[in-house]
Image (cartoon, rainbow, N blue to C red; front, side, top):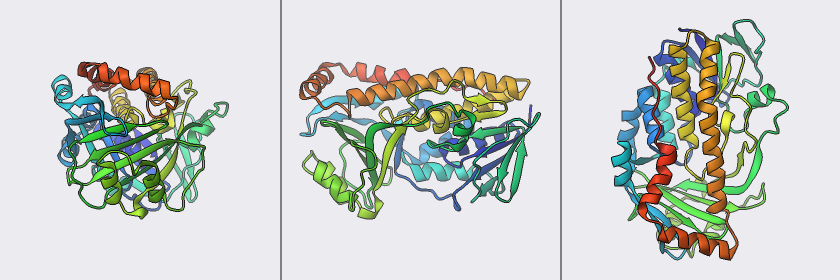
Length: 385
């Protein structure tokens, strides 16, 4: 089965979906409201499930070549003591690939360049969709409209298409946490590839990149909408006395590089990921908190499964039914686990609860940490034919 598709959203999930659809012979147009498809953002960790999805889409090797494997690292307390070590070698042994760290901009660039430029339409905002046209779907734009056999709504956390398709759904809720993050402007000497440090209601983490730079993120319990005139200075005040290399990471960061976003999620799961010939994908379908590092990986899984379903099912309708059946239970389970991980990790504030959690982590054997990661990362993509 072949056909035409419009993908709304030129982020990681949307580009991955377009790549998958083109690999199975579909004509694809990606509509992105930004005037330029800029390769921006901080950093990202890709677990084995995300890497396997990229392999299915044909871009896994390029991503591996640009990424840095995460073999050494784990979770620490603010004073520097280890709570749990991450055994990247054991993960690689179990899964065939380690977790990797890559700048989000690099991943976006690799996905974008895997598509011909003529299929990318930028500066065009799709705010609605006509799902009632028989056998076709129509996307109105400011200067016209696009019609296709399929629409993929990959328009992000604040998806307007999701709001239109599910008007009774309560939509996004604030998770209680806000995140500041940046990439250092110069290389930093790091003893580990990846770390998380948990304090009371706060987390600081870093991801090392292949070029010696690093991404850092600071997640805090906070009311929504709080902003700082100098975000880097505010981060320094909160985390500057935590263990090395946290002060060094902040010192290597330009104040202009710090991004600040409140974390929202779909705490109420969607009843279905499809509507007629429209499929929701990535954050539009299952926006989750970042506490498991699975948001992008789940979007990549979506893209691989959608392409495989359309390649093998006899109709768009049956393919979307299969996509929903395969993706909704898994992605919503991962979203619930991410929320719980946040509550037991970064968001925990009571001193006795923090002390009990830290003691349990110190006493747990390393294989427990490996099993925890395997629970979500050990996923096999379907074949595209």
